[in-house]
Image (cartoon, rainbow, N blue to C red; front, side):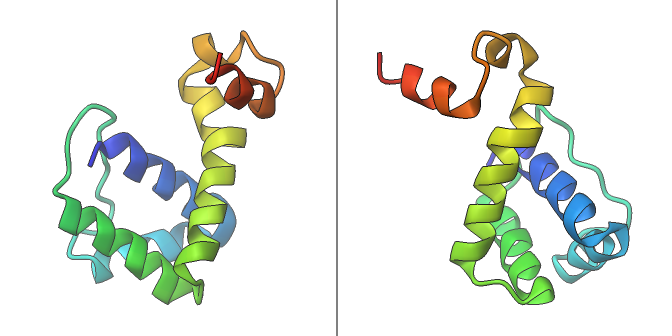
Length: 102
């Protein structure tokens, strides 16, 4: 899995639940405290999925709830910040998504 996904997950967890929650998720998932994901590296799928599962467990979320939170955070907060040049063309995420089909 591209580490940009995990970088977004980190951003979501810290903003929604606090840095201690993210540090616990890292430790529970076999990463060192303070581990950082580069935007351009690959992480083995099993380790990435383990991170998502531990977010769900630690925050008492279903996988569906976590996926909804992640998708919203990706489209409304993270991707517009990381991919400014793409998102600047569209005033809303909805318009961006609708333009993908054209």
